Length: 421
Image 1 (cartoon, rainbow, N blue to C red):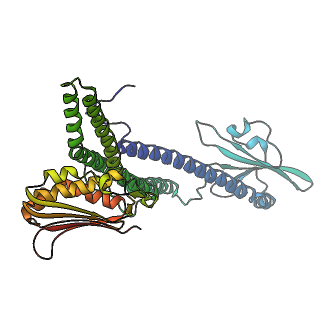
Image 2 (image 1 turned 45 degrees about the vertical axis):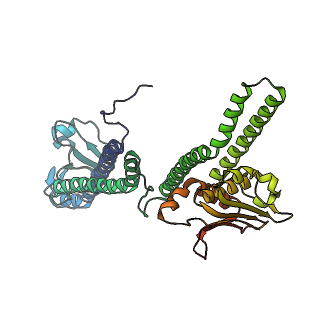
Image 3 (image 1 turned 180 degrees about the vertical axis):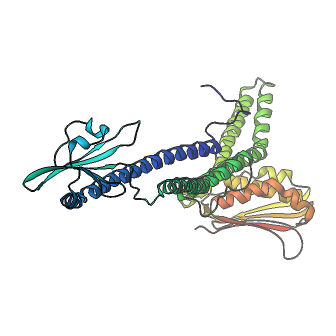
């Protein structure tokens, strides 16, 4: 397919389409008007010939009465009508036409001279048959009272005026229909970040098109945000298992002891499985695909949460206590519970240099409190991505997450309460 140059104006642009449409409409209107005008003029001409014929025939009785009074060979009955009572008296141009049909009006026209009409009849006078020829020039009478040319001019001006008005009307209608499309094209070309918009008086199809454009734009932005969130969440959550895999792989090459290598392989497999579950969970929360969280029922124990590393990594003067209500089941995947508790414990140990961190879990609540520095303008920012992940998991599975300072002013409390039960 041949490509057009960007600098070359498009033959199919709205501007050119409108120009071609107006030209085509003007041509059609002009031809149609001319045909109508020609038909109307022809009809008037034929009507005028009929009127002249009736006028000529109406002089038959007048001619007979005139002959009965004067017995002449010809007589001028009116300014335009002449009567001949002898065929030999006919003018040469009439006589040359040959025998004239009896009882009929005969019309003769030529391109070089004006035509004429002849009415041939006969009547009885003193027991004699007298021929009668009534003649009149085809242009001898003007039934338009001399205003035929003026009438033609007015008709032409009216025709041009109608074409002009209809052209303006078509242009207005075309602009009304096409202006929303031009607006949408400009908005698309300008790469605007806002929603597409057109006037409320636009046709329904264009309004529907605009709604779909806005829907696709929102979808595109949502997908971009989901990809960005997944990248952030994955980089945050996969750092530890990747470090475990790398460390176990390096250690495995250092010893040939079969039991040691088996242990490292188990660590690698466990970390890889954890990464797979983490990725699946992160994909779910960024896409918000959990439409029926109540279908999940996960039993939670202290061993499942693998909290040993938090006991060892906590500051020297900080104690971590865990209390899980017996028979606790939640509508969260186990990897999600680990991710929630892990992120909240990471934040708690970071801002608690001395004191106690308490973890309490039941079927309806997950609560982690500390007596550290609490929330302020600085560490509120440092909590960052971990708390955002907790918030998204809670939102996806029907839990409400809050983070607030303790009532006694020491430390803060992170609480998730199940509201979709």
